[in-house]
Length: 433
Ligand code: SAH
Ligand code: SF4
Ligand code: F3S
Image (tube, rainbow, N blue to C red):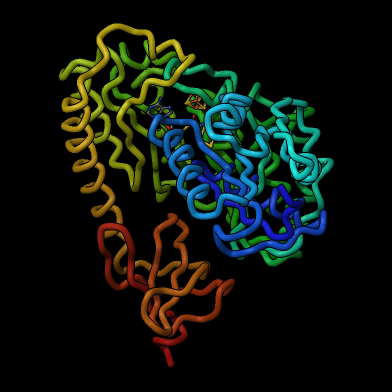
């Protein structure tokens, strides 16, 4: 294997993987490698997701396809599949580098090692050492991610994340503020704070609410978001921040998974249907216009039709602005995978369709409710037609504007129409002119 000159990072899975992918690319660029846009690069880094079986299987089919297309290409597997399967990936798919989510600052060295001919593997989990070893942030888009917390101690019985990302750990306050300032200098107007349990972030008496107050004072930072939160870490200080901090956007992604208490217990969720609903009451009292989002799993082992109906009734009660819903996928090494009464695939398909129908209706209704409102949007990308630009509303909806201003503009629009997944806006100045 000759040493690669160009590289391409391809990220799957959650937003933290997107962040990690950017940071790996920065580390590779700092080590002298050249970023290439496509899969034809000398080195392809697959930054993988292990959350459901489909995501993991995709990694192996991608590797097979790439090896056929260009047999001399170097392949690195990073992310959660790398952490979960380690050396097994080298045995099964003959890749050159395997690097876990806590070790990717070592990627340039591992690539250099692999170029000498033997596979290089690093799945160590040294707490936080990668952040100190990564180069500073330079060029980012108007909306940037910033990891503040990593890992999970909750051990929901279906989930691999506590094993692939390790224990809950919070980055130091000063490191986060420094990175936020660097992101704003590099062009970000919006920062989304990331963590597997982002609202569990805390150090030295500070919690996510007080961190948000501090970030709010950074000049040029117009918008703050955070994801993903856990119901049990929804502190009053964070809820109050939704009332008190204007730059904190009115959006909360708070996974619930099921509306039935027996299933929630079997999932080890440590909240009930009612405690989840009461948290949302408090959040809505602090910020009445907040858009609520959630995650759902249908077909957890043993889930009866009546128990699934409780999920539908919870959805009817909350009326989410958007949501993600999944068929339960048994994951190796998780307690739920060994439970009796695994649900038949056709039952899961049927339940998922009914749940997504309800969630889709609620999303369309939420979007329709914004018609007639005036709000700010942050322009993030061009639309499909010439002149069209797409930005995000405070409630995280995509808003299409004809003859829109350049990427990075923060403009006021009147929302004039709504579809199931996006809105149409007219710039306020354009309208007045
Ligand atoms: N830390 C976040 C993200 C976890 S993964 C959280 O606590 O929500 C994102 C979502 O994937 C979860 O909320 C859950 O809805 C879903 N998920 C996790 N494991 C799954 C599995 N084994 N099968 C199906 N969906 C799963
Ligand atoms: Fe997975 Fe549960 Fe942790 Fe979320 S809280 S990452 S679903 S174990
Ligand atoms: Fe997937 Fe790992 Fe994120 S399993 S969802 S990439 S934390």
